Each structure stands twice: as structure tokens, then as C-alpha cells.
Image (cartoon, rainbow, N blue to C red; front, side):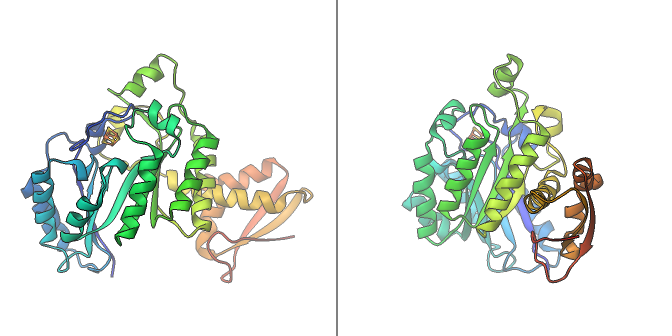
Length: 329
Ligand code: SF4
């Protein structure tokens, strides 16, 4: 049976900061405070769909959940926790790395929170400071350790192409994530949104966002790194919907960004295996379920190699696992 997640947005609530790229009102598509009745009705609607309880979650996203005024945070938790064990397996929250300590973790546990995601964004202190995050990479390390020690599932979120970052710094951040052994990761290429300081930097020419091509190339490598380390990437790129389209000024925002990156992994795998081989015709074997990823959107991978003088035929091979390829002549 399928799992379902109820996503509840708490835009900017509890957040003491204004990171230069953040406009939570734009991201969540609403600016009013989340009401108890809205939580109940979202959950009641979701629970009517047949689902497996064990891996279905009620998720509070946006803002900094553990920094919300205590009474309000408890009331959100109380409302959601009434459904835990009966209809849902647990509650998922996202928060800032510097808003986690032993006391807050014991409260979260009591109310059925099972997964905590940290908006780490970067593990480079210079990038964090330039983006006015208000926390350090060490805050993330400490919070991640505490979360794992207390038996929660750990999620880490990173952003690529931040102001002051680089491909090397983003790769470093991913490497640091691997060392923290999260259960899940989300990767968001930076988007310039209206009403943010980053938008001012962009207009003044102080910030140039990644291109779609650069971002896909980088995120394919990150995805591969996390895959090799058995870390699940549960999101690549911002969700469509909300009001992102309206607030969008520049940056990487593509509705099929994840698929582009998956195709990018296959492109890299073939590139590595073909390295040094003469131009000509080749057959690439992949798991049958992976053929469309190997082919790429609008046959982009086939085209890419054709331009380099490699003419590829893609065939399915049940023996191969995800992200495994075999090349034959
Ligand atoms: S910590 Fe999160 S909610 Fe707060 S300003 Fe930064 S990105 Fe926005």
C-alpha cells in the first residue's frame, strides 16, 4: 500500500533570520499563519486515502519549527500527534541547525516526531556568513549528531550556487554531509526570488546564478555521491506550485530538474566507460526501468554522444541495477 505525506507550511514562523535568498511567503504560497483547523482538515482529507500507516508522515515545513514560540509549537504538535500511530507513522519537521538541543529533542520525541530535517544549506562558514544564515557549519555538525544520538531520522538540506559559493564548495558541503550520515538529503539550486537581498545583488550584478546546464552537471555528481553512500536524495529542486513562479526572478527552476540530473548520472557513467574508446557504434545496457533516464529528456544523452561521434543504442538488461551500465560493441 502506498504511503502519504501531509505537508503543512509554517512560513517564516519562528525564524529569527532573513537569509539573503529567503522569501518564505513566496515559497509556501501563503503568508497567513497556519491554523489548528487547517492542520486538522489537511490530515482528515489525507487519511481518507488508503495508505500504509508505518511510512506515512505529517510534515511541518518552512520556517524553523523548533524556534516557533513554544506554546504555538506545542499546539501544532498536539494537534498532529493525535493521529500518530493510528493513521500516520510519525511527524517530520524542518528547522535551523542552531535551534536544536537536548531539551527540544525530548519534547519532539514525546509528541511523535520521528524525522528532523536541518536546513544546513552549506558547510562552508564563509558562504553561510555571506548569505546571513546566522549559524555555522559546526552548529550543523552538533545538531546532526544530537539528532542521530536521540534516535531520530536525520535529513539534511543543501543549496547549490549560493552567493559566494562555487562548485568546489558545494562538492565539499556534500562530502561533509556524507560524513554526517544523514538518512535523507534535499538539494535545492539557488533561486533568486523577488523581495530578497539576493535579488538586489542580482540586479546590481553582484550575483550570477548557476545556469541550468551547470546546475544539472553539478547536481548529477552530488546525486551520484549520495547514491554511492546509500543516502537517499528525496528532493532535487524546488517544488512547482506555491507562488515560486510569480516570485521567480532568476536561477535554476525546472519542473523536471530531478529527471535531468538522473539522466546526467547516466551521461557521466557512459562518459567514464567510453573514455579512450574509439568513436563508433556502441550498445549501452541498463536496467529496463532505467532506459528513459539513460536516454535523457528528448534523447538528450543520445544526442550528446552522437555529437561526439559515439552512436549509442540503449537496451534493457534485468541483471543490471539502478545506475549500473554495461557497454558492448
Ligand atoms: S532560516 Fe530558513 S526560514 Fe529563516 S530566513 Fe533563512 S531560509 Fe528563511
